[in-house]
Amino acid sequence: MAQRVFIFNSTRLPRLRAVALGLCAVLATLFASLWLLSQFRFFALIRETGTLVRKDAIPDGQMGAWEYTLTTWSLQTNPHQLRLVRGTFLSVMQREAEKDLFADRLGWEAHTFPRSAIGPERYPWFAFEHNAQWRILGFGPTRTTWGGQTAHTFDLPYWLPIVIFGTPVLLAAMHRRRQRTRLRDGRCLNCGYQLDAPMTTCPECGGQRSPVLSTRSAASGDPRQSAPDPPAPASGSHPGSRT
Image (cartoon, rainbow, N blue to C red; front, side, top):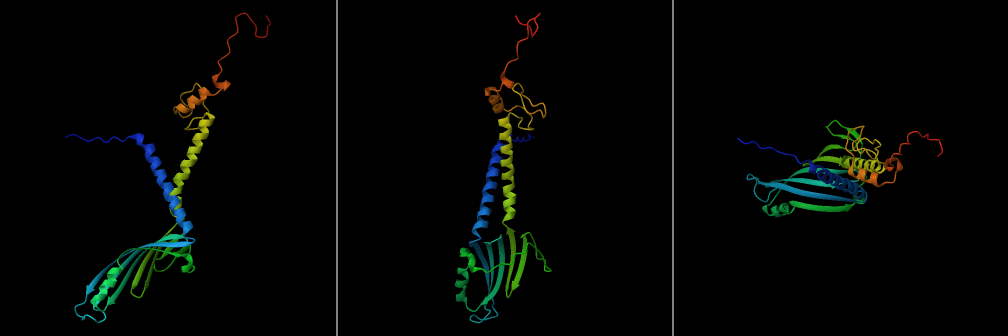
């Protein structure tokens, strides 16, 4: 039976790394922009689903003849965090004609409103309560119940994805700057050892000399690297004698 051999093409690594860094930069910029815009205006994306059940024991036209469950998923922006909310609402209807009103509420909706529409919000950085609600640096869940509605909330502070996605971009920029400095100064790109023109391999780490570095060293007018050795004095003559 023939076996499949999977060969990983290492030449794709720089391209994949560039794509990953570009994606991290876009996501970090997106969350930073949301954080800034949320100081002035809020946005909410809502999806509502539900079920409707007929209670045969109750005649149509009386309260409780129809019972429905409405489930709401929403993604909201807030001044300090993104908030994911899952709400469940239980209620009843009197007549079958009210089903159209229920059906109109289902589906996707998008809303935007100014920050002044919502009062000041209590935002503890550290909190732990008896009902398993906790918050560490703005990260944590919340459960709220009132009437026939239950809401489960999960907060994701803006700073967390900015740090997660922005750190690789910052490290890559620092690495690129260090490589450019070493290339300009004629140093090994791996360890920073100062390389002379004849060197093709770094004596410190064993890394190969960069082709760009070799070209620049040959083209530079550095007498320490390009000047030939002085000729040996003739036999029988003293370096300080005059002829």
